[in-house]
Amino acid sequence: MSKRILNSVWVAAILAVCTSFGAFGQATGTFTPYSIYGVGDLSQPGSAFNKSMGGVGVALRNNRHINLTNPAAVTARDSLSFMVDFSIYSDNKVFSQGGIRSASNTFNINDLAISFPIWRSSAMMVGIMPYSDTGFEYGFSYADPNLIGRTGNIDYSADGSGSIYRAFVAAGVTFFKRLSLGAQWNYYFGNIKKTYYTTFNDASYNSIRNSTEAKISGHSVRFGLQYEQPLNSKLSLAVGATYTTAARLGGSMEINRLAGGSASSDTLYHRQDILGKDTQVSLAAELGVGIAIKNPGMWMVEFDYSRSDWTKTGLDATRGFTASTLFTSSVAEAFRLGFEIVPNPNDIRHYASHIAYRVGAYHKKDYFLLDGKKVASTGITLGATFPIALTANTRYTGITVGVDFGQRGSLTGEMVRERYVNFSVGFNLFDIWFQKMQYN
Image (tube, rainbow, N blue to C red; front, side):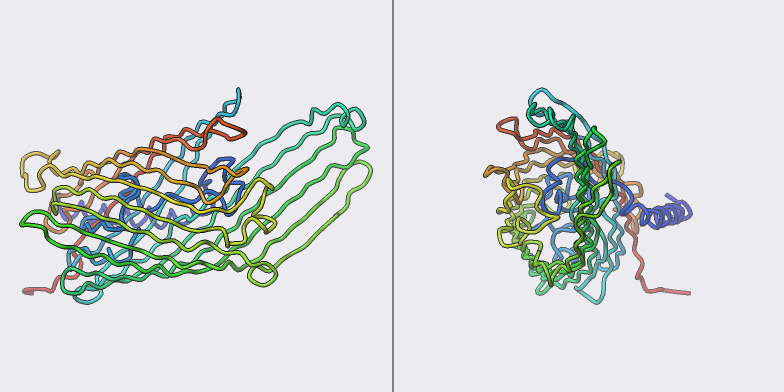
């Protein structure tokens, strides 16, 4: 591929990235009844690269991609490389409860990250990605004849929307060519709005609208380490760990209760709490560990485990985050397995030999209980990265595609079962930007 074409690719990519900033906060990240609880539906970890392998990455060191799950991995790179990762995703669900079925389709930006070297064996990355999303809408009519016989038909409905985003700055350094340490500062920000309506068809009764709007900010630090040990001339073993501190939330929570109808209209209740002062709410700390075996440049397999305790975050005792007495904060866990293979990266004749093929699986438990029951998700992932340049400077530039098939919840009790097929597309831009001129 000519230098002129590559420059055009870079210019087009930069324009797409700049345009995408406006999409953060405008697109809907999710649509699910489970996002009514707490801070919403937590995003799957990582970029399209991580997602196509079940979300693994704690122990993963790969110089072809930016690994967003462990800041220590930022040093796994060609020493002069400059990398950009930008991905989008589509969330497609089918809901079932009893004899009722419905579906939803949403689209949003998944991540934007830039990585570059600092000095010798150290490097940095900066970026932004969703942390959680809220999106729901439902309604029903009261059927109790003793109630509607006196007041007429009564309809109840609710809707919610919003997202919390995480901007981050990370740096890492490698010691003795095997031990890598990293740290990442996360800044959380966003809005979540939830509204609940009780509507009387008899105009002599006032309808009620309850609403909460949270404007959220907070920060945390993630620490990471990775150690890689050669097993023989071809294989190596890598282990990794991350710990993310809890993030105490600041901002505000505005609570309103309004009555309106032909008889009168009035504000029944209004209150604005300062988060962190009037109300103590936080995002949970998280611990992650992983182990990987790989033949560098050819194949790798990794297993990750993560755990976060949400029982002391205050979400189930704070208006605006507590949507039901059935909701209780709990311990979230995730088990992830991923595999990648590149058939022959040195093949100069067959393009398919340079494609990275991936498969993964996961099982995770949400950070809350519903009526004392866990809400679990299980899925499998498939993906591949297609290189778009095989020159010495840009051989890792490519397009990553991934698909996630899974199920969340079940049909037992009053739960909603979600079956989903999610798609992600990532753009991996790689170039050598820091070469010294050898001649004029």
